[in-house]
Image: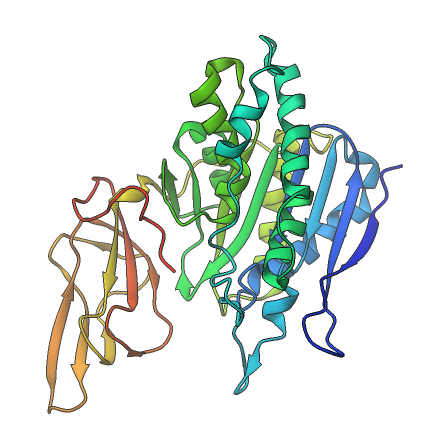
Length: 373
């Protein structure tokens, strides 16, 4: 019986009388292996509730788990402790390690020269060799700082998975998904099961996010050793709408979508319902227009989430509070779907205000610099 096994693992003590720990749930063993985590940015709560609902579904039928499922319902106990002026912050480490979902160690380049004598012509055997080597690399990561230890601990449970789903949300947003372009078919399945409104396909987004740390080693090794190296991990970032979209109706719907996707991949037994038709758009990440504030002031939107906007259309206006009714229009640089907005109307220069999913790559969007802090 694949009943749930739960462990609690302590992080290093960085201050006297201050200990934090990570809670991890595991079902089954073997292949395929799926890893799901929520709230690596600790102020993003929708995924925590969705994974609670998924745990209930799995507890109700543990024998249906054919492979292995690892669930981390809150991946950032450090960030959850950052309660200031009535709000949980949790996006940036107060120590020197910065954004919790950036600079996650990418292991492909350091691993490539170590495998030259080990790899053969059998892709499945190579996958087993690579997973074992990745586990060794993660075990050797620095863990002196608490933020480093957290990233290494999370990776130790996900780095050998076949599927990694890192669950986030935006300020105010439609449900959307960041996924690798070369695994488009899998991404489209997940997007359909989750009723995503925007699927954003990426090659080199930059930033060293958590999903990249799990999937990029396989691409790096394939560049070195060719197609005898499989794409052994599908890793993605799933954005469950906005920070305020926390309710049981949406969470139950999201948990059901995740359960169906895992069934399609053979992680859970049973035949899922027919794949729903895609509801949203599928665009390149370099086609996403990120609108930024040209100054400080009060933001007024003229378009709502879900609007189909035209190039040059006014999305919002920035009001200069030092002047009477002085407004600066903020226009779209592409035609597409308005899928995120800022939550706070008081904005600062350079702050991200909205994202628009356009079909055509934009000149100012540079590969390797596509992710925003």
